[in-house]
Amino acid sequence: MDDRTVQILEELASGRIPGAVPADCEYAAELGRLVIYLTALHQFTLVLCQGDLSQKLDLPGGPVVGSLKALQSSLRYLTWQTKQIAAGDFSQRVDFMGDFSTAFNTMVERLDAARTRLVHLSTHDSLTGLYNRVYFDAEFERLSRGRGFPVSIIMADINGLKQANDQQGHVAGDLLIKKAADILSAAVRSDDIVARIGGDEFAVILPQTDIDTARMAISRVWKCITEQDKKGLQVSLAIGAGTATDGESMQAAFKDADDRMYQDKAELKRQAAAVSSALSP
Image (cartoon, rainbow, N blue to C red; front, side):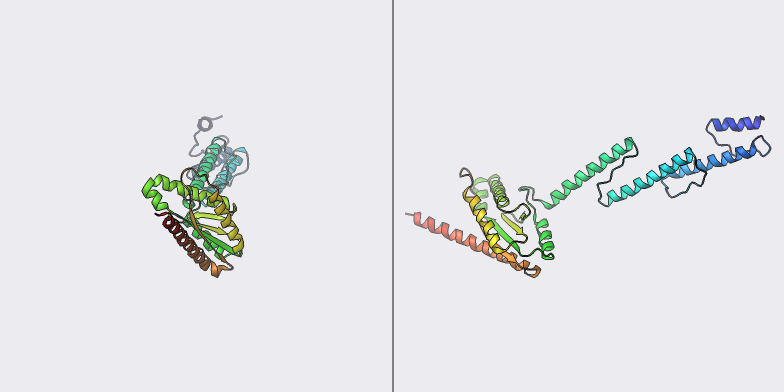
């Protein structure tokens, strides 16, 4: 074997690709094809490292070419999965890249958990755990466009919250709000929408519920109020209900419930004043 052929083989054995193969050395044609093959592999690998997954590897099959094509296919699929995650699909998992799969899946799980927490914070009242006004308004609009009629709405307002805050502090006021939330949640169905829509104001949406059934729910609220622990602060609520038979009457039902709630509040104040007057010397 001539010296030039030996030198080329030594370069290949050391991991270098010769720039050219002299035409007059031994096995020149075979070595030339090998250099072209290795150069194509090298260029394709560099392109992959730069993140370009669109290149084609037009070489005869074999374990090396097959492995590189499998790697390219895996990276393409991983890229698609990443785009799905960016679009909100946190069900994607990687199971074909060893330690990277573990790290990637952990990242996705944590992103999913963080999103769940953020969604909960954006739709729930931090004090009571009930839905907030933003969620209530969104559900109100959704049900207005739906077919689940009749839809009833219950409005409730805490009596004496300002007095509790002024006389006993905001800790006492917060406790009243939490108790009111618990009472309302206990009196309605699990799929009804109970929301705190203001400082002392609550609203409940009852899909596929007529006015008689809504009044039964209010009766359960009264029962919960009368059965509450007599020790400590006592919750008193003014309550009203309205019912919509179609989407166009949803706003009217909301107003009916609100008006009846304020009528109930006025009546409770009148009764309290009458009792106070009767007890006065």
